[in-house]
Structure formats: C-alpha cells, structure tokens
Amino acid sequence: MATSKVLAGAQVVLPTGTLTDGRVIVDGTRIAGSAPSDAETIDLTGHWVVPGFVDIHNHGGGGASFTSGTVEDVLKGIHTHRLHGTTTVVASTVTGEMDFLAQRAGVLSELAEQGDLAGIHFEGPFISPCRKGAHSEALLRHPDPADVRKLMDAARGQAKMFTLATELPGGIESVRLLAEHGVIAAIGHTDATYEQTVAAIDAGATVATHLFNAMPALGHRAPGPIAALLEDERVTVELINDGTHLHEAAFELAFHHAGPDRVALITDAMDAAGFGDGRYMLGPLEVEVKDSVARLVEGGSIAGSTLTLDRAFKRSVTVDGLSVEDTVRAISANPAKLLGMYDTVGSLEPGKDADLVVLDAEFELKGVMRKGAWVIEPNQPQLG
Image (cartoon, rainbow, N blue to C red; front, side, top):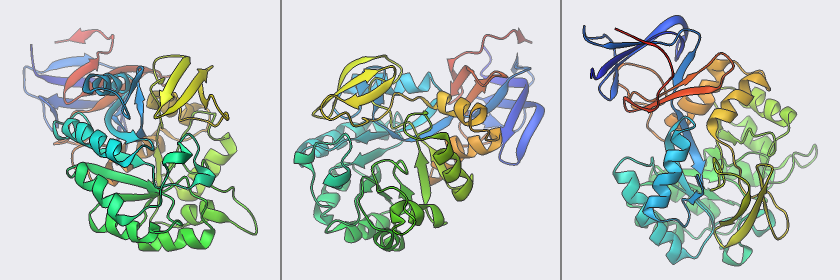
C-alpha cells in the first residue's frame, strides 16, 4: 500500500488562508511539497482539512485519568482525544501531595519522552484556597520556588506549564524561575488584584488558565486579573468553549479583545470526556457528571469538562461566528507556538508532521490523521 497520499478537493486551511479545491500531500509521517507518481489519491470534495488540534490543558478522557491512572489508562485517554481530533495533548495534573505529584511526573514524562504526550501541565497545588474550584483545599500550598523546582526536576524536562496563584507568597519568584527554564507560568485559580496580575505578567507569566473561571469577576472599579490578562499582548488566554464554562457573550468579548493570535481553545477535560455521565474521581474529590456537565458531589463546583476539541471547533464557528481560519489559530497554531512545537505541528506546511483533521460542511469530524496514519479514516471513495 502506498505510503504517500494526496488529500484532494477539500477546502484546506493554511497559515496564509484557505485554498478552495486544495490538496495536502502526505509522504510517510510528514506533509510533503510534491507527490510521487504512486501516491494514493483520496477525494475529500465538500470537506475541510485543518491542522490537528493541540490541547494544552487536559486531565483525561475515555474513563481514564491522567492524574491517577496507569500508563495504560493514560494511553486510553490520549487515544480518546485523538478520536476527536486532538493529535497533540499535554497531560494536566490536579492538586495532590508533593511526593505523589512527583511520582506522576515520572510516569507522564516517560510517555512524553516516547512521543505520546507533548508534556506535563501542573494545575495545583500552588493555587488560591479562595478560588480552588475542584481542588482539595487541604492539599494546597504556597508556590515556594523550591517545591516548583522539585516538580520540574521530577518531570525530567517535560514540564510545559504550571498554573499558579501568583499573588501568594513565592508566586513572583516562582514565575521568574519558570521563565528562566523555558516553562510556561500560567495565572489561574487566583484571587489576585489587577495590580498583582500585572506584576506577575511583568515577571514572565504568559498564559491565563481558563480565563474567567476560578478568578475574580471583571469589575469596573476593581478590574481584577481578567482585565490585566486580556489587555497584555504578552498573554495567551485559555478559553473553554463548551457552553457551560462561558456564556457566549463572555467568549466573544475575550476573543474580540485578545484577538485570534492570543487565544488557545482548551478542553480542561476530565476522564468523563468521550465516556458518559456517572460518578468519577478527580484527584481525591468525587465528581458527578450529569447531562455532560461535571460538578463536585460536595459543593457543586464545576469540575473540569467533558469537552472534546472537535465540539469546541464546531461551536466556535457555528454558534460564536468565528471564521474557520481564526478557529484554527486558536485550536492548533497558537497552542503549538506556546509549547515551542510550531516547527512540527499546528499548521499544514511541508516538512511538518502529517497531523490533520477532516471535517464535513457542517463541521462534524469525519477523519483524523496523526503522523501520516489514519486514526479515523474518512469514508470517502478512493481514486488511483
């Protein structure tokens, strides 16, 4: 069977714009600039071909947890999200004991080293008890740079991001430490003022963890962290576009103000994503998922999401009215750039990994390719 493929006839979204009746050439694991004579041609007329999705904030899926599952569980979660178009995923932890988090970092770093994960995101324990969300308050701690360094070391170079309440003691010093080591410092689960947030950005913080959620609301006299994070060109804002975490008006306000180059669409998925309603554990806390909305059994706080990025893509275009090109930036290019991986993923360009998603005219997922191999093969007639 030919290892080279030509995906022909689709609307192909490139960094420079959309090609009508375009084509993508896949040679082995990469996108190529020209096709050999024996290439297999796949007719995708009436479809869209977009880059594979990149999720920088994801706790699991398919009934499997990145936070506490076995290696097999983590791989199951990764595969679940691949089935929904996410070809690059960062595994996010939740608050736990330091020794447990260090042990999890070792497990997850092995999967990152072999290419299954794009790295590790530590969400907690360095967050505010006032904005803890679905994190155990008993296990929270201040962001002491020594503790941050312990988790960085345990991750063996695979730590990509830490979410911090930077107003807490040690917060600014930890931001500087992370920035010095090329690790993203993200502001989230925070009770910071506007001024404290500006200071953290000036120290090197570059991401807002799920903007609006787990932080003070935007106020006209006390604008808080939301205004500081939206206004600063150095900051990329994460948005969970599932219709539960954000009202359409809040999503549109953030996207309009930050612009398409400063938004990263994320899932913040927990293990119920792609699996169904029921009872689950998120770290040490019990979660009930009902009608696809995850909430803590005790207290009722939203506990991550059941979102997959194919649903976020469709909602962004069909409900929020974003252009396909802007949605691609937010769901593929921008997160790839944040991770320092844009030379290999995040756009459909020759030399990059052949990671792509096929969508129909209604933006329903029809095919997924990762490194040149179909995860889901489009049900299309094949020519040649």
